[in-house]
Every structure is written in C-alpha cells, then in structure tokens.
Length: 303
Ligand code: G3P
Ligand code: CA
Image 1 (spheres, rainbow, N blue to C red):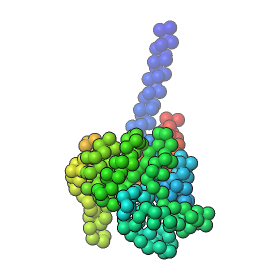
Image 2: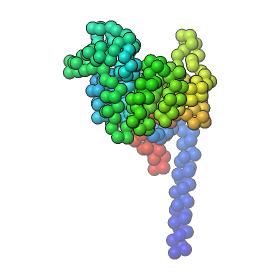
Image 3: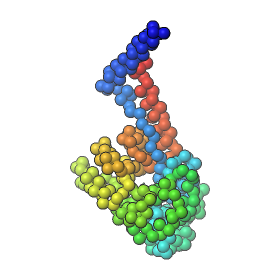
Image 4: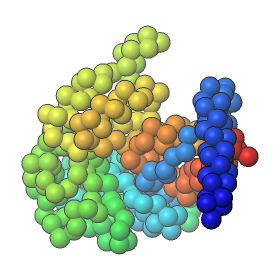
C-alpha cells in the first residue's frame, strides 16, 4: 500500500510538473492560439429585436429574437402626444415608412402612429406591421428573459413608464438612455429597476486620437445619476482600465451594437455583462465556436 501510494505520488508529481512546465513555457509563447483566454459568453441582447431579419422595433422582430434564443431584447420608446408609450427609434416617421409619412413622433397621438405601416420597408412579407406599445412588447417576454427599455425622449415619460411596468418583476426589466436626466429620474422613481447610462465615444477632432467622453467624465455621470452601470458603443478605446474602474465602483458594463465576432470576442474577454447585436443567434454561435477553440488551445500544451 505504502509502495502504491508513493509511486502514485511520484506519477502525480511528475504530471503536475509537466503541466506547470507547459504553463510557464507557454506564458511567453507568441502564438495567439496558446495565448487565447477562455471566456464566458455574455448575455446576448437583440438590438431592436432580431433586426437583421425583421423590421426593427416591431413584434415580429421581438418574437424572432426570442426564437433565436436571445437572453434579452432591446427596444426604443417615446412618449406620444396623448401620454402613451410607443416603440420606435427615430424622432420622425420618415425612414420607417419609406418616406410615405413624415411626422414627429412626440407630437403625434398613439392612434395616428398606429396607422403607419412600419414593416414594408424591410420586405413585402412584413407589410402592414405596426409600431407596438410598451405593453405589447412587455407581453412577449418569456419567463427568465429581459427587456431593455431605451428611453428616446426625456424624463417626461417616467410617470407613464412607472404606471406601465408596475406589475412586472424588476429583474426582467432594464432601462437605458443617452439622456442622463432620464437615468437619474428612473433611479429615483423606479429604484428596483436597473438603469444603465448609454454613451458613444467620438473623436474630439478627426484623427487626433482623443476620445470623448473621457473615462473620468463617464464615471462622474454614472455616480451623479446613480446609474447601475454603463452601456457604451463597442469602441476601441474601451479597455481594461475602464472595466477595472467600473468593477471597482460595483457597476455593470454592457456594449452595443456588435455584429462582428472578433469584436464580440474582445469584449467577452474584457468580461462585459452583455453584448447587444442585430443577429442574436448567429453571434452566439460564433462565440460558442470561439470558446470551443479556446478550450482546445488551453488543453494543447499538456499533451
Ligand atoms: O442598445 C443601445 C443602442 O440601441 C443605442 O443606439 O441608436 O440603436 O438606439 P441606437
Ligand atoms: Ca436603441
């Protein structure tokens, strides 16, 4: 028994030495294959629904996103002139009606907006599709899935929003907005619902490599609004420095809108909480394939 144990220990020790040697030897290996990090696939959010294939911000687009296995859907919302909440992206109706109509969403009533065909521009099969209400979008959410409600207007929407979501579990809802006042108002009035401030990095002058907002001003806005985290464009400037600042402040970190697997992989490596994409199923498949490649890469040096 003693002999067995000691020979087992020798074998185990030798195996451990081999593994450790391989790890140390490969720490400086320039091969990108061996340097690949394993990562967890973040939550996949369907941008305006599965808007690669169906008309954005419509029920067919949201339903397709659920079929494609999205963890969450994202939709854009305005307060109408008569105090209802409608789902559409632009300030006016021109683009989604193919120029057939051009009215300002916030100056129109819900019924006026409901008469518009916002499906035909995407394909004949979507002819007659209407803008949905927030209630209708909420009703599509399967158990355990989430809706990211992007507020495209100002804080005047908050009372109607509060009334509409009052019976929904906060865990299934997220509020996002570029408007910092909206985030501050939602955190005050709907504290159980997480709210993320949206921002997009832009160069301060063409080609100067100076990006705005700075990380400092991002953090200041997040603190001032009491945001639950940041949802930014998937910009090259976002790196570990910012992610560390966010994590140290106990804030979430999300990105939009990523249809490129290499970019998605970079943000997954950074540990992003969710990736918003127009192609939820396809992007998840691409990331799954990348995680499998990584597992093989990690196993390779020990063979
Ligand atoms: O998810 C955030 C993203 O949707 C913001 O950009 O213009 O598509 O609403 P936009
Ligand atoms: Ca949006």
